[in-house]
Image (tube, rainbow, N blue to C red; front, side):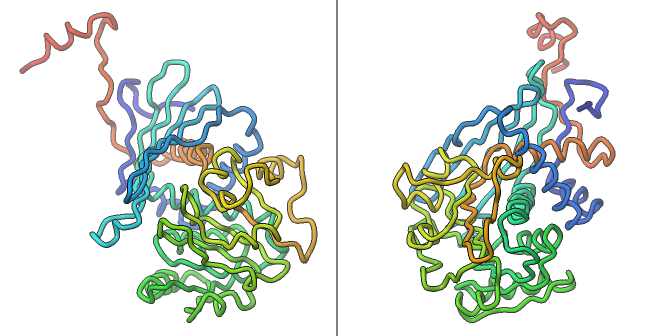
Length: 349
């Protein structure tokens, strides 16, 4: 993969400021397209990766998680939190950073912010999945939940699928107004809706992305007609769902990693042996995605470490050509690898 700094002990660090510069240098929509390509490539080689459900530490107000994986050549992990009440204190619901390391030496090759990057890779994953699961030539998406992920989802579906219209609904009108304002000028027809039912009128794709950490029923069975694709990304921890279980029983369900999704996703409402399909098998061409025009497809997405690995690879490759990073003096580098104390002793006080 190459290492931009000349000294291997110097680790490239991509700050929030540099991540924003990097994305703007590429273009937001082009970034989403390229991220989708990286994620698709890693889904095609899914079997090469170490896979484990994320390591989660839950508290009454949220969760802190580590998401590790390796393809045998590089190792990546993400630290991420999810605290829905944070917005009341003016804080982000989700923050994250990530590390990509060389397996042969164990040395980190990249440290980067991943709050913005997670938003981008989540949207890119949704759109990549919808390429295989949504009705062909879908043009309209309902976006239920207009928080921090909303605009990324809308632009990813525009860039990757060609969606032209987005219907917005949130229980907080200020969130909808924010999203409508941010999406102005991006080539989408954006409609603020008075109810979820209103938002879903004429939509072939329904994305749910709400934040409350509870069993919720954002969509009831009677709201979902035949032939739609549901992109459910809000149910992402134990005890948090968005869809009525009857919708799940009517849908063909696709997941990232069943062992994790059964704990955290919409399917935690169903028996542990309820049949679901793994998205990577569709991406790899081993199974078909959408089978008929009237089929309801559901991507029960909770996010998985391989998607973060793909995003870390993407950033790593980009900063070789676009040096939006700072050299971080992170690793001790004594002249003699066995003389760490000597290095300390010779240091100027």
